[in-house]
Length: 250
Image 1 (cartoon, rainbow, N blue to C red):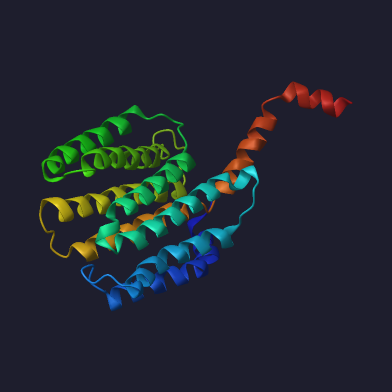
Image 2 (cartoon, rainbow, N blue to C red; image 1 turned 60 degrees about the horizontal axis):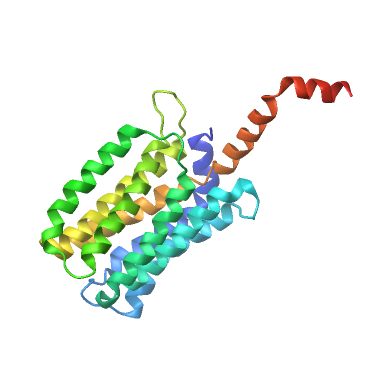
């Protein structure tokens, strides 16, 4: 388990571009009613900064970086989605890009442990949310919203399931991915309500604050992912003491 103070010293400088670009986004703050290439650049720069953060942390085709590669894929699809959502006419294409991002994130988080309780809670939330918004959506959104809710719910369910407090099988990086997935749910819920149900006061600031915080939390989860894979390999190697003793005897 990586010490938080050590992590702050080692990864803090790599996150400076992210915090700077987020600050620039909110200082300039181009309203979402004024789409432009400049707005695309400002909106995407924080996510591009997180992409570089992942790459700087380490990347290759080995098994120990499988988690990082999937999170990287999620960030890349998210960046595409961000660019598309600047323009209202590409809302559906943006949803597809973010749906692909959630497939990457869910794949990274894995499916063990199952955590039925978390699945039930997330499913109830999704059902209530879809029940609220469904009367207001139309056309292809009737199909796309439930599909996207299913994929987003998968990310949230698996993000929560990584944290096992009672078994003490948790790390701060797993906690950050859990918080990130929940914040992603909050951000996307606000988008749907604001765009289809009723205007949310200060919606852009609320949506983007929770969104950037979500992506940061998910990105930080790569910090000790490689160490976790190495530890698992060591544990597997130690699970066959008879075999090892025979090898040593030879």
